[in-house]
Image (cartoon, rainbow, N blue to C red; front, side, top):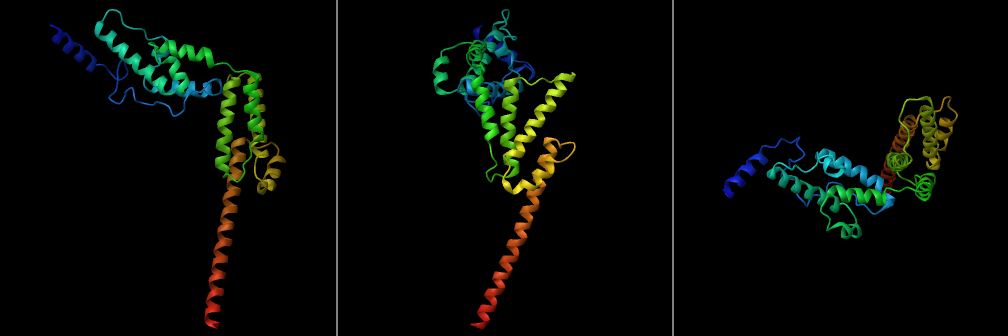
Length: 254
């Protein structure tokens, strides 16, 4: 009888559709690392939590951390499968935290409880966190990075700050004005950190009426970078050609 029940249970589980939260793909093992960053504490909780939510949404397992998908109580087979999925999700969370945090939660049994405890403990933003990030943005310089690399690094910090400050996304007039001001600040920060070789193009952008958008400024500076690199390449080719010609003449005379 026990073997028959086990066979019946395996048949039920095998018929689960991929959109069912209880479905586990063959690759959904406890060794899986679903995100590439590890939670250290308050300083990177927001980024970590957003990355983890995105990964769990792809896996259709959000219900195991927000408590919306509760354990079935009238079906022993599905109850066992829920416990298995809960353990898998819990392991994914533990795989993405620092060793210190791991040791503090390794004996936990519920993914939702661990998620809530981590949120209650580390989802706390004070003025020092905002100050440090804002200072880092304002002092960040290109320092010979490509324009794309420089913009990409700035953009990451901008998104972190926007997430911390909960920038409004509604379409009301106050929100529109605030977002326009926020984009203006980002434009200034981008232009301030550029290397001095872009001083002329920066001046031209600043005297435009109206001022360009951040994306337009990035595009214009990137084109200037490509133009400068092309000129350097042509100059180098000419130098190589003159050097080769001089060597040829020297060899003939000798």
